[in-house]
Amino acid sequence: LQDASRSGVYRAARAGDVVEALSGSKLALERIRFGEKDVLLGNVAAALEFPGWFGRNWDALEDCLGDLSWSDAPGHVLIVEDARPGDELGIFSDVLRSSAEHWAARGRPFFALFVDPAGALPLPPLYRDR
Image (tube, rainbow, N blue to C red; front, side, top):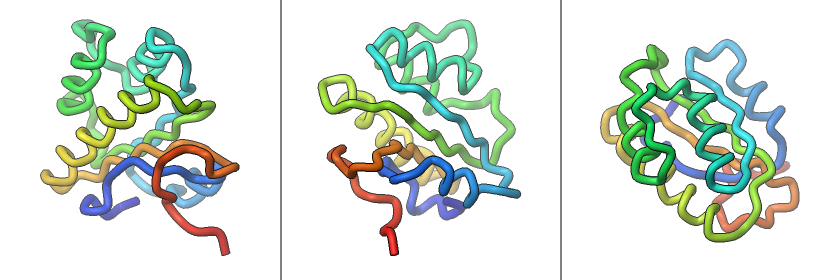
């Protein structure tokens, strides 16, 4: 999670494993609860302390995630809980993937990790269970 070149959108079986792996890290760790679009956007905005100009739509989300100038963290890890397959997941993961590519090109880690114990979400796994 420290390697910016591996930034991206993944699934993980347990949030606790990610939290433990980041223990002592300077990366910003934010937990976000998935929901309907308006709820989800509000949850992301609150977790990342978006500025007042955030427009609560997908384009504004991408703009804010591509800025993050108000954050002093050297990188970000977002843990997304309670996600369900569907249109919102597809759009949200596309925005997150674009943001991860943006930050990776600048040498700053950006990871979005969807908690998915059953491995049902159409995302690559962050790690493999032993």
